[in-house]
Length: 345
Image 1: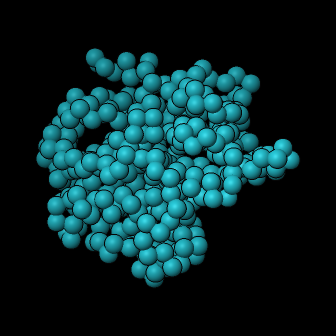
Image 2: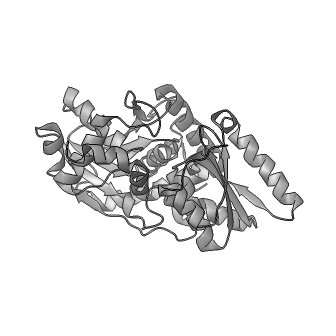
Image 3: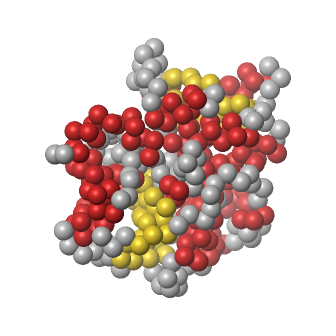
């Protein structure tokens, strides 16, 4: 039975703990009125090249890759995937090869190198562009690649989209342990709000809350798919974590459907990684009000969803809210033209 995250092998990649910052000017600027007490957990400050939430997961996943004797890691995501960029750079730091399967509209006409894609290429990752249809079979494609690598005398270690499996999710137990020491009065209720893209961060937060015995909630603004998908995906990860790591009964959150993550649907907008003017204007407003830099794919949409929910109901998340800043700053570079249009509008 897992009793402490310290029991798990890990490679040290992230700058931890990340700070927790009070943001008294942010909600009044965005809402035009007072809201709950808002803090920002700055997981965008896990590092420069490894900025964001993915590195917490990669510390555990890449330790497992090393334990298995892998010389190559494989993973997948959108063309501007923060996870793929972080995996490529972490692999380079550890002397591992990296293969990225990146989803694009037309693999025959790949996008120009910019943002996360550029950084992955600079790190030496082998980039394979695949269609949306092929991406649906990404797990099978990575399994086939591992077979190819074995035939070459190499050993591959596949990492799922977003690093979101049982082992990866445990990286966010550590985030809860940090928050417990940083937040005033941790015994009082609070709600952690974050962007949901693959489910692993939310699952890890729920596990951490259960293992630490805290009266906290988790709410996610999904930036792709829909609420039923994420409820199902988070349950799957939690069930896997409980089974694989023998977690105590208190952490078996999904067996009877209790304490399932609160998904605030309706803010996907035009689609994953596609922006709307009101989302981009919110990014501008947050930067000017608090000096907080958000990205258009994840944190911008998540904060947009949070503010819209608060406009409808000031008590939607309770009196204290922690917004988990999961990074994504390099995604701004790929959206420069769109953002430039709202800078002075």
